[in-house]
Structure formats: C-alpha cells, structure tokens
Length: 384
Image (cartoon, rainbow, N blue to C red; front, side, top):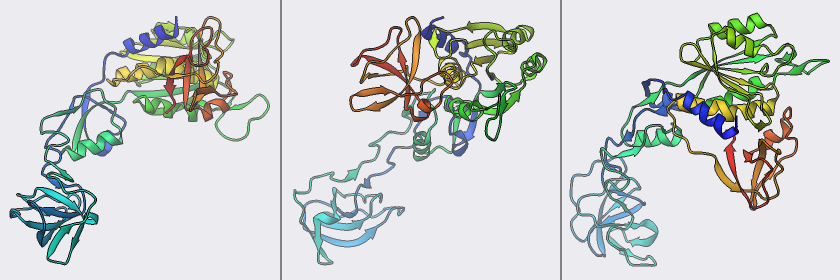
C-alpha cells in the first residue's frame, strides 16, 4: 500500500470519535474540543484603556480629577473637558472619548495638556467593548486541539469547563528479549529507546498513554497481551516482519483481528501494520528499529489517534528543499530535516536504527519516490 493510502486508511479506521466529557479547564489540556467554543461574554466586556495615562473627554486641555485602576467598577460619567488618571485594563468612564498615554501628556497636578508627537484622536488607545468577539460568537470549531492558547481564550470569555472528547487510551507493548530498561548495553543486548521515545509522540496525537510494558519474545505472552488489553489502541514495537520470533501476525489471527494495512511502501518502516481488534479497538504494529518506528507512528498511529479523538488536523505542510533530497526508487522516504533560510536540509545518521538525526530534527520530510530536487516543495511532518 502506498504511504498516502496507508495514512488515509488509518484515519478512516478511526472515524468513530470517542464520547464527549466535561472537564475543568486545567484538566482539558491535550484533549480535543467536542463542540465549538462560544463566547459567554463580549470581549472586552466593557470599554477599556489600552495604555497607562488619562481618560479624557473632548478636546484639551483637561482638568484632572481622580484615578481609575483595573478592577474598579465605573459609575460616574466623565464631563467634557475633564480627565481621570487611568491604568491599562481599567474600565473607561462613560463620556470618555480617548486615552492620552502617560508619555504624551504633561500635568501640573490639576491641568493636563498634550505633548505627544501627534494630536490625540477620538478612540485612541481605547479597546472598545466587543472588539475581539461578541457574546454567543463561535470562536473555535469542534475538533480543535486544546493547547494553552485555547485554555486562555476559554477562560477570558467566561468558561470554567470545556466539552472535550475523551482521549483514546493507548497501551504500548515493547517486544523483544534483547531490550534493557536501564544501564549500558552489553553483549547481545541493547537499550530500549522506544519506551521513552514513543509516548510523547502519541500524547501529541491526543492519546493518553496508560501503560508502557515490555513483552518477551513468546507467542503466548503476546497473544494474551492482545486478548486482555482494554486500551482503545494497542501499539507494539517489533515483530512485524517474518523473522523466527516475529509472532505478531499469528497473535493477531488468534485474537480475531482483521488486518487493514499490512506493509507500506515507505522507507524506513515498510513492515508496519494496522489491525482492527474485537470491540472496536485497534492495533498499530511498528517496526523495532527506532527511526522506522517513528515512521510507522506518523504514518498509521497519529492519523488513527486524531480520528478517534475527533481532532481536525491539516495535511503535511510544504517547504522547499534547500538541497537535493535523495529518495528511494519506488517508495516514499521519511527523512529527518531542519529548516534553514533556504529551505529544509537533511540530517546525517538517518538509518532505520539510528537516532542522532531524529534527535536534531524539526520535522520529517516526505520525499517522493525518486527524490526531490533543490527548490522542490516537500511535505513536512512536524516533530512534537
């Protein structure tokens, strides 16, 4: 299956978004809006000063009386020819026509005069009520990922809770007898790099990573792990090929799974797979080599998780290649790159088992079969 077809298949497989839940703002980070975010008030809710200075009524000079600070409710109107000292964010009194910045005014304590570079104009340095939005206005569509900016906007327009999609729960099974969880690798043994590497990528896709578990190269252990998992999505590393201890295909068959993707024309990572498990659950099988596993994550796992969480995401963003990007003769190639003023440049150490290139990468470039010439646009998959 082509790389584009595999990604589309993964997204279609997840088009059963999980149910909505109501969460306090602090708990909603990383979830996805289940419905549009609407304003519960005008923003700003009243005319406010955009600067420290004086609220003035009509043309100057003005007689100064009093002070207004943020948080004070204003009742008394400002008569023509009067001014009141005002702080940024404070409510303008009725009758005020502009705000004179502190650095543009001079006062002897009673009388205020302009001394700025340009004459004061009506409405200057005033944030009028409803400038940003009106009450009831839809500010963000459902499907928007909840990031810190969304939380701030929700709070500003009056929300204490948000309706968001439940995050798909992921269980990560790291397969292999040769993997160490700590210490320096020894003869025949290697450190598990995917246990630390993959959860941040999965969380960036909207998932809740419930467990990272090592599973030995034993068919029965793997079969039982698949049968008894309660996660929405099981992600495995290794065992996707046809080696002597690659038991994943057989374990999926005995677990009653249906293969949706079994191999993708992409390098690295072509032996990746996607299966539907009983109970509307899914399994993403990633190759065991680190960069190949990341390729499988962006190809199959992230589109599936985005769909399950109801998340609307755009396609890969294009950028020009600063130099020629070597490609595979027939397959798509995912290449770690960094941005420069001239476009993206490839990074060394980009083999399937290597991590030095990925550790410095800002994105993965989607290089079409045959490669891309300098100046050609290539799609970018952002690193989290």
